Length: 243
Image 1: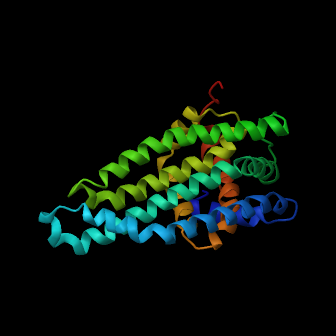
Image 2: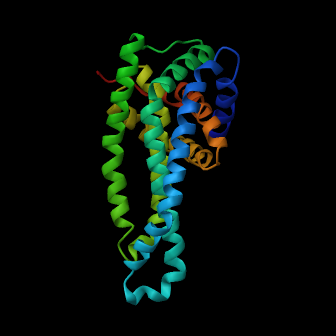
Image 3: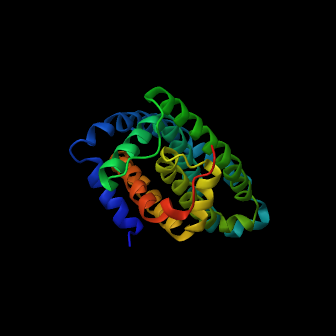
């Protein structure tokens, strides 16, 4: 039985194997550029953001400042992480889609059902990322607002952790599903049907993304691992929905 850690490890080896590694260099360069710009922006503004948040804490909760401060820090870091992830996926989506298709053909011996040409695949990949963004953004905003509610926001780090795992499952497992003509709604249904596999894989990918700089080189492995998860856990859950 393929688990999340094994899939991620095998996927990383596959991504950098002969014949596949050429698909990972462009996403890595894109990630490096976005990472550098995002890091510079965050370092310049992080202190001001944190001070603004702490100023909103009501006086009657002042005695909890020792606990609220680290919770705010964690929430702010997670929000920045989400922004970085969404931007890099939006830009690198076509290249990740090509990588997922090639990995599926090599690792499973069954090429994806996708018969679109190069340009249409690239354009559709960007459109699919916008669909993901439309799904994720309002839910992230709602969770962000919850993080500001005194008392309730004590649970915010746990909620963000679960939400991060779910988002990473959507972000990466969608590549092989899109290549096999599985609609976005059907993709979410399959992820929910295998919720444990989805959350554990998404959680592992989330942890990988927190490794400074090394994460840029491990993300292609997460794409490849998602293909292995697709073949093991999701392919046979039902016929693809009409697109």
